[in-house]
Image (cartoon, rainbow, N blue to C red; front, side):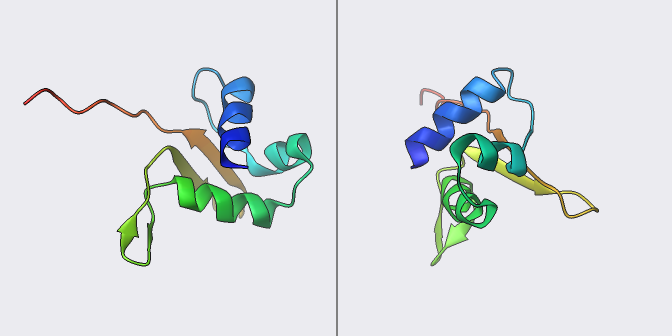
Amino acid sequence: MQDQLLQTLRELAPGGEPVALTRLAKRLDERVSVLLRELTALSDASLGGVPGPGLVQLACDDGGRWTVRLAVVRPPSPG
């Protein structure tokens, strides 16, 4: 499911712009609540004290509308 989510985000927003969770849910024929759980695991949120990979950024506006965007993941600098 997570690979499918990331691939669909790349298709819907190749420039990394935010995508409404309702749009993503319709595209994947999934509930928004299911997507929120999956996307939270892909974000930088800490679950059980363990930070996630930070692959996506979730946001909720003042109207309660959720969006998600692919995070800019930079490779570690050579040390």
